[in-house]
Length: 151
Image (cartoon, rainbow, N blue to C red; front, side, top):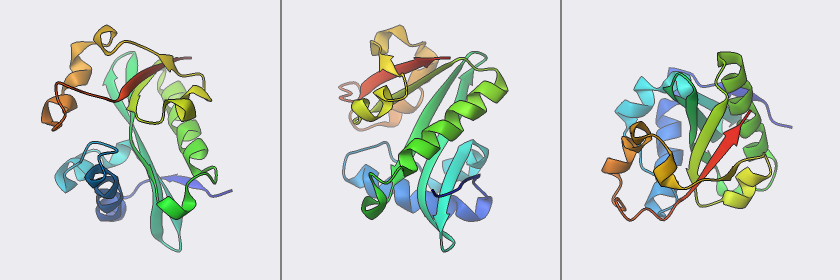
């Protein structure tokens, strides 16, 4: 199994390229390089031959709430367990931080439901989580599924 590590600033450009590749396909929210750099401590990566092949971020939203975001796995490595190790890393870090509620917006709800995420109405989430949504070209007609995990 591939090893998950905390991202380094030298990974920022590769994370940016990976996330925005899927953004261009309409599968996730684009992230500017500056934002990835500013939030590099949120990111976990999987590398293969020094190339980032998968990433995910655990972004703390409030004292009791965090989001798994910007989760991406290169296409030829999907369905190999990389997503699972990234989710596990995010949930473990949330536990270490004392955060018991984690949410995500996704087009892959069945994947997250394997990890005990459940459906939630977006309106039930605090308004603070909508900060990124205002930048999304799909706002306010979001078609992503909101899920939540309670530790």
